[in-house]
Figure (cartoon, rainbow, N blue to C red):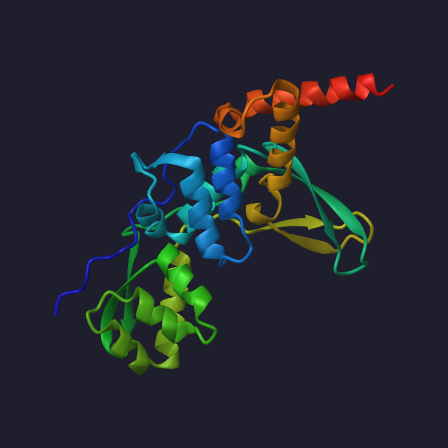
Length: 265
């Protein structure tokens, strides 16, 4: 029987057009960042909130779910740069000596690998004959995050393009599964999730995990504080304040706060 059509889109690092950043968009972002959601769902929700178009198409959840894992990581870094300085400082703790260290990083220069020919598909010689697989996408990530028993066999069943992929995954040998996983890893263009450096105290190598969801996006209480300040000073209602471009809203809130500090002296 013929293989099924792949779900993963054949674009490794898509272009993206951000939405105009307003308080309404930031509220959507705050909802997206709720920790009760599995990480793949948070990533999709963040990208939906912040981008208008991706790869020239409307940035709908259905499109974003079908992007490869590396494409989603690329867009998440792009989204982070709307809030976090392009060049920023990160703090970590050395596993060797326990000392704290600072790491300077340019979010626009995070290392990434390039797609191989034939992306997003790979062919693997298995004990059942040659079989085709698609590189993992957001849907794959979401399924794996929900399955506490997920393993190489689960991955093979999810990414296999055969109409009998699930049944064949149960028959693959350990060698088949290792070859499939290795082929998918090699074929998946990705963005570095860890940054390597050296501890300034003991000289040991250190590795800092880079997840924009942990550091890049503003806390919801900052928006609440700015709305409160502007509403109290100007008498504007919340919808009016949320409709302001975010940069303008922050300037108003900063001026009001600065004036309040001067008046308190």
